Amino acid sequence: RIVAVVLFLVLFLQPVAVLGATEGSSSGSATVGNATPTISSPQLTDTASNDKAGGQIDVWTEYWVTVTIGDGNQLTDLDTVVFKIWGPSSTEGGTDSETSHYTFKYTQGTDTWEEVGPDAAGDSHLVVADCQDPADQTQSSGTFRLAFKLAKVAERTTSATWTIKIIVTDDSGASASDSSLSFGVNFYAELTVNDASHGWSGLSPGDSDVALTDPADGDIDITVTANAVFDIQAKGSGDLTSGVNTIPLGNVKIHCLLYTSPSPRDLSTSRMP
Image 1 (cartoon, helix red, strand yellow):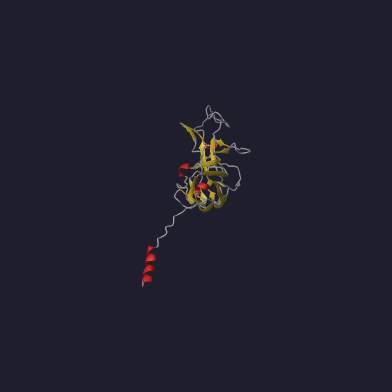
Image 2: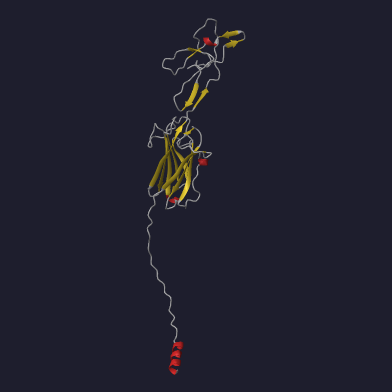
């Protein structure tokens, strides 16, 4: 019993050891590899979001190319997003022209859209106000939208032989591309009569082969803008009259200087080739 008590007292009186806390540090580094950008869900639509991929579009009308772009290093790692659009008479590396080749670019560093060509100075084929890019580019993916319109002379095709290629490149030079979108271009033509009036002066009965005296150059100039081969036709509204005097319309001849061997033809109230 005494032993038991002594033992108990010894254990009870045993001082508790207090251990002091200590700290250390280790410096190090980690290398994060570059992630190649990605492209997904490319779309070609009109401004009402109607699908136009594989279909026909009109010149001088706004359309949108929308695409989701990803980068595992965040979108801030992107350098450029380039959109190349070309027709069957050109190639991806062709020279920019209103007829067959267009290049547009988004630059991440300056957060700007631009038309590289054919109108680098005026951006006349880029609708900057409707182009979009992600507001928060610290995300790993986002939606980009190119708003563009083709020139009135963009070559006509009856099938989807125009190609859209999207190329995204990051700051390390890694890139991805997609050329799955295509479309065709409808026919377009417009005609302007440059000389608003014409006429003869000093005519006498029996005169023949008298050229116009108004305009002074003796012909009626017209301007045609078209994206394919076209025909020019002409017709008259009726006989030429002045009071009771009449010159039958059939006595008026017309010829087109575009022809290799222009041959005068009688005017009529019907269109003629």
